[in-house]
Length: 315
Image 1 (cartoon, helix red, strand yellow):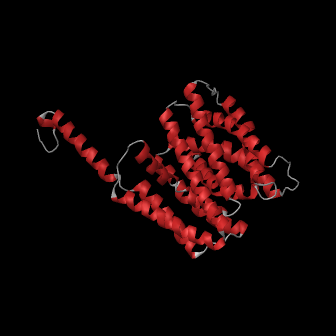
Image 2 (image 1 turned 90 degrees about the horizontal axis):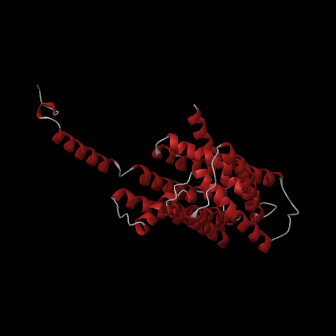
Image 3 (image 1 turned 90 degrees about the vertical axis):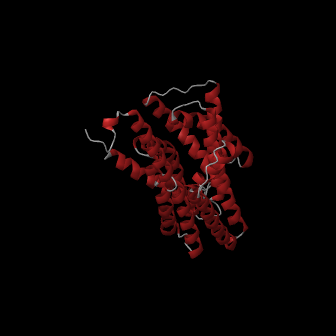
């Protein structure tokens, strides 16, 4: 029951975060919105570390890991927050769903993993096709909307690059510790950016912007992170990956219902193409190799068994 509740919470968090990002910048500005979120996140994640009795190591590999995490928390998130000014919130969730595809491409060229089958190739083509449709829809909304899509794709790329950098560093730190260290590095960068580019306390807040900043800082950054990694421990990775298929659909519907964001035929087709690409990439092309490995293991085992105990033999 606890796993089911945690799963539902993560789906809802991922579905509501894009709209909260958009609302948090309406009034105080996107820079204040993201800086306020990270400041609240730092305040909230400290007690969580104490409760879970997790130290914050500061050796060489740990510092490199925190820098890699900060790359995602600062560079990736600030790109997404900037983009939220110009594109519907539901688009952010759909476009960020391309992260597994981007990660796979980076893995191929950076880590030297060259496996590529038909389903993987088809998933890349579907993803590009869906992205093209969404770019076409954005161009009808103006140049800034197209730049907004490009910024979200940049954010997804930086997110993937950060994850692979953490893997290459290999510090093997707990996930919560990684985020705490990354936040401690990213927050000063946010404060400096806000101070240089804005530096004035906002003169206008809306109830939605205040609630969104608090929600993102207290819930999405802290509780959402803990629940997500709890699911990774308790469930198979394939089942957790389903979240990236469910949450974009909910985010599109939520943006349409709560923020009157349009869902045109091109947007819907592009979103479905991207989700189909993600499904192909995550859930196909694995059975064949698995069967081959299983068959090879059976052959090895049969060679080790005595002749009278091999399958198909009778005593």
